[in-house]
Image 1 (cartoon, rainbow over the protein chains, first blue to last red):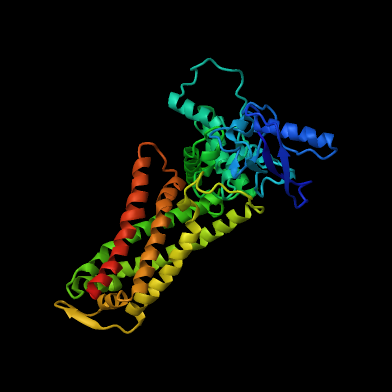
Image 2: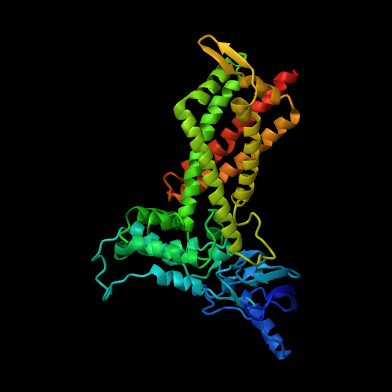
Length: 249
Length: 229
């Protein structure tokens, strides 16, 4: 099929940037969305032009590197799918597809579709860890953990930190990301000792990075490629309220 | 974290908006319960007696001033958060998802809140101001003597079709604001559990989003039609 791609081009973080239109023909329905960009970039290189910069790594939906805002949707139209796992059978011959980078003050554009997501790293550094060395892997069931809690912690830990929640949120809020990271530790015994300090520190860092606040629209949950639930945001709120009343620091 | 820091975080501020919002939810229930007396065709005895009680009871007066402060806190912090949220995305998207990823109501809280604020100013100027500082006819009912005849003022106001329309539109804004507002406040307080999420939705949408605004909107409409017939 033949597609028209309107792609955001921006030389660097200072450049104003703008859309460029590209015609791509011979697109197979079996191609992934990123492969279309590979084909287009090869052509641009052959023509002596600057290829489109975009983030990608594993290309199997688990690394969280790819980050395209496609026709108004983070990671495109498919539910619980990363851009690399979006296949061209989602589109019809002759379609025009608008591709933009994640838009947020806390995610400045590096070039074209690649944005700087190190704000997420700094939120993790603020408290998304366990301070003590947990040592070697212990015997299974040495520490009893409720199956329901283990499953909920695992579901929260499925977050790949891609930033689709921020991109999809009308306020560019990082609450879904932060809540997933707080939850995966707060639900398990190893994470309990520091749970209040963690919630306070991570929320403080989240605010400092310039993300917006949550208005509970649920757009993050709808767009999350890993199906992280906003019940995690409620948990973060509970953790934070609890910390407000009884944190030690 | 000190309380001063706590209430300066995004979540801390949201908790203040949520708490004041829930207080205002409780207020609309009481307000509607009292207003229903307007529909009683007793020459205003029930309503005026009620209005006089509300206007003179010390505790009620204390809560009434608290209510105005609560509305201001709710509005001021919500405006602060809205500005913060707007600046969090300096470059807007060219294509937006519309209603595909979130409900329309949930995205219009600031707009509907502003409409409600304007409505409130008009509403207070029209009735509250007249009752307290304006010229108002006095009536007496048995033991209750010389009370302001607010009933008459209200019935007179709702003779005007455009005022009736204004009030109905105000209640549409209230419905849209509360359909998301009640649920959102519960989520901010961390109340999210499969056991009672259904109940929260029912109270938020069914009760605060439909029954309460409908109850308010019915009053001017009924009074209008009773007077033209």
